[in-house]
Length: 258
Image (cartoon, rainbow, N blue to C red):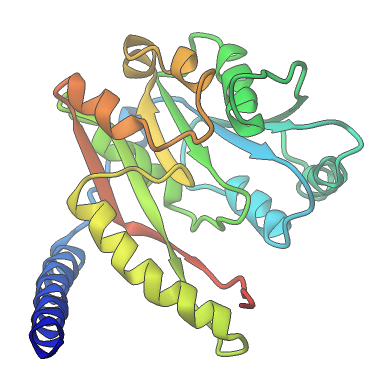
């Protein structure tokens, strides 16, 4: 028993040292990163796809932020389960308030039985796009984008060696619930590992349309439950880079109870 406790203590200490070193590497990358800025004429027209279901508390702010992006040419494509979904009413009200013209709302026409509802929505949304969009971006309803979100997400894709760009979610607990603190602790470790192993996050992600077609992503989405877990392998098979953008570490202040 004493030998086992010694082994366990050493193992935990070793894990802590490794995790600390990895975190320091991540922090160094965050501090050293300097966002590049391209002139408007070099930024390709982009489609931003947002799949909605239900009245997410962050949805109004998410939509406002997406309709006020510092980006020359982009269109926001919303796909909602049905017109009876609460998200449809929220989206319509925001569009009317802002007088937005670069947004289109569609409802899910067919639910696929071999994949999740979100993947069904993504397949439909991308399939409906015409050839005017060299870049397609994706975002989640609980993500409130800053004004340069799309510009910073798309800019690295100008590089021929970069096939996909991504950010990540950073939970910010307010101290009201223990669940928020537990989730925050796990989030710290998860974000670092996703950065090191280049695992994309579907809540802030952009991909070249040509690459999306080359890897047959729509066919793959039609067979899976999660939209982002398969992307690392598919992009790496094409010998392309996955670029993590530190300035797109998106804050999430949603509380969680145990």
